[in-house]
Length: 306
Image 1 (cartoon, rainbow, N blue to C red):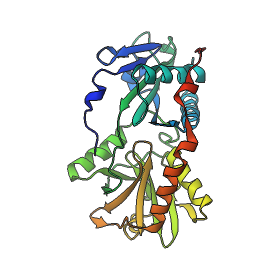
Image 2: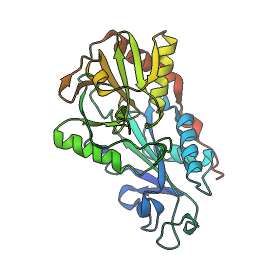
Image 3: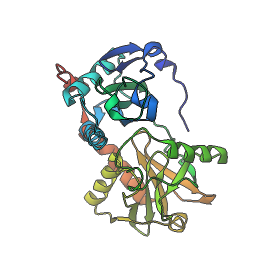
Image 4: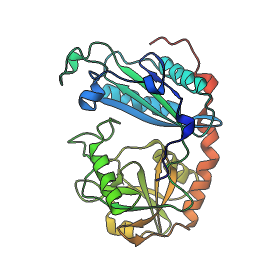
């Protein structure tokens, strides 16, 4: 893991609800739903020199998640984009930035589980930090399969990008104690779902496979990689993938906004090659399309209406 405290983030300003606050003053109420029950949704968005990568896709997913959880008084897209603009501009951020965009159900009139207690509207948090990629994509990462399963749609649908991340955190804790970089989470049937924080791909005999998006998030970077494979006429298949298939793969890699495309070089002590032509081809193509999917910062500025 490459995440450490960056001194450049010491004095950043953070958007909370309807304005910017210094890092030391940026807080939510103890009555906020995110504190009371992890009742919030979020997106991780990367800022490159060309702009925000796949911003509209991230906002679409944020709204999908908020609607699935029956949030009320959700800020408009114009309001959210303007909040991002104000945050980035105030912090003079232009590149190599990660934004944690959070939308909580808001503050409650009294402590309790019932969403009807939330009578003040949603709370938007725009936390932008100077942050490079979370992994070293030249050397790759080591992972272990964990005892913690990824949620199934019958329990807590992973298509809702919610803040209730305890099962992912438990998987990460298990990986930490094992001295590896991430935990590989399986679904209820023992097939690969995803890492504790990113999607997975497996390359075997010229074909790229990825787990069906039943127990994992249908990640935006994941979708980009699948589109790249199609454009390059590389066979791409969604299927149930067993651990033994991953152990014997030609290459395995993870995808996500925090790390882009990251080779997985070891699973449960088994070494996996990452000097593979198909992975290199896909990774190169991904870098080439980044500017094509970036929304410039200046285009976000507007008169907020929601």
